Length: 119
Image 1 (cartoon, rainbow, N blue to C red):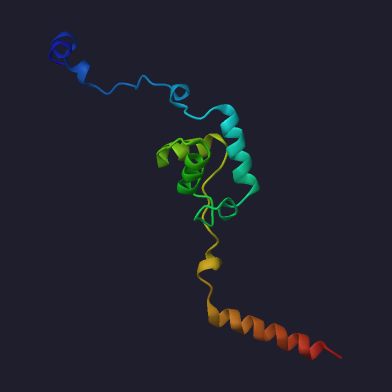
Image 2: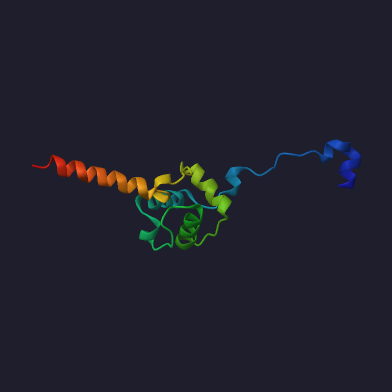
């Protein structure tokens, strides 16, 4: 570094673009990627005996490790998912936070209407 600093001055200390390309960092073969995409789209993690209910980066990473014996970081799994066209999604709010009082009132009103309209 000392030689480079004396030769190029302050320009030697500036940030540089990394030399690695995305193609060099691929650890899964194309046929492995295809079979993983098919497994992810056709089945849920619990059907594949994984301890998850939804597909997360952790779940996909564990699937890759179990299927092909390749351990990937969470970030690498996320990069693969992005390449394959999978996007992160938030769960529906009402699935977790349902106002019970309004929900009960809605059902009570519905059943009352059905009973009133019955012959």
